[in-house]
Length: 586
Image (cartoon, rainbow, N blue to C red; front, side):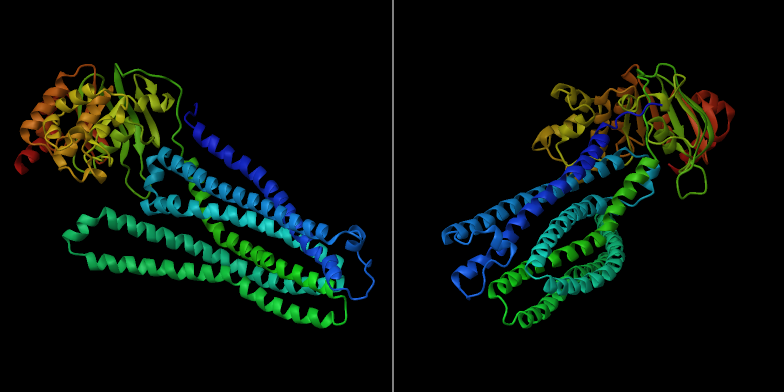
């Protein structure tokens, strides 16, 4: 089976891998150059101070005295120092620019990769996770992964500074440098111990963010229900508790990241006193240069330890991102290579069984059925009988655990996924509209449709009159999820969107339940007038399927009856019982 449609994913993965290969070496070189120039500028303080404050001591006593000529003019010496500072600034600016660009691009690419995996994954994968989990990953953790790239670059850059500064300090005074290294080692030991705690706190931070995002998603999605039942105060209390939990976790994470600064301040104060006492009576220029190097090295040592701690806290964010990517890839919606035109014979399910994750009963249990092409087939049955599952399988939103779905005898998994879905148009019971204009929502399945084609589809769906009565007509924005429109208006727009697509298979899942009787009849007349189209109709009100050519009756995931309306009435079985029950409760 050929897998198609993975180009963007592979391209994004290649970009991430390529960037990781070149960014760190470039940042390392720039960091070495930056701090080499900085350290050289500080090191030149020795001859500068000796020129400005003569002490009568022998001047040619070190490496710097050998490199810098004794008779070098003072202005030349100052010029070299200024040049070193300038080059240090340019190299540092380039390193920062590359790091920030890389962090932003990494976050961007990871968001694309995660969204790609989510949007292409199977229904079973998406139903196994909460909406808040996806919101947290896309909105928070991908940014934190970019911060991780910044922390890694900072770790490399500041480590380069430590190496250079320690090397130059050794040239100035090996004994004092050993004392400094010993003191730093003590702090690094404390930080290493803290890193284990930081990793645990980082995992707790991800979990807290996930719960917070989940509570936000539930609160916004269920806003109408909350208000109708007067549960505002309860929901505010729940949100407050989750938010407080997140605040406490991130406070501990921030305190952990702030630990190295004060620790190094204490160490630096102690070392400063030791150095001044140890160098009493010694060469003043060397003491000044050594103290300057030590003072400049301190923030780099702090940055190294902070970067290590931050990488530990952000590790959980990276783990959660790649766990999602791995989980989505373990449940791929692969594509075949067969390009099939509109079905012209039969859509069939052959002994299909499908179980949804977390349920004990099969949604479909060895179901076999036929949907004749070019005719109207109705799926009927009580709630939970398996009607929606049949739709998902036919539109290939899910694959069966066992059995096959075939189109004109070809296994649906062998057919090009995009090509097949282009042959399907669905009007769901719960209509979703994008927060854009009515015209854009109708043309969503056919972005190249002309205004005349959009209007023709709207007329067929009995939507044109109410659209033109709006202030902006087809340019009227519908609001988030279409909240500015009534249920019947949303359903008409969804019908127009499906009719405009002119697909070979039209699925109506309770697609007229929000319409009045006259509108239902007009829409049904429009559907009957359309030729060469397979209509799959799902309805609870059996009166709406009387004109179907073929009826399939489902009970608890099994096909119990199928045939024409006349054949099923003659059987006096499940269909008749459902019809009589529907008439009594009408």
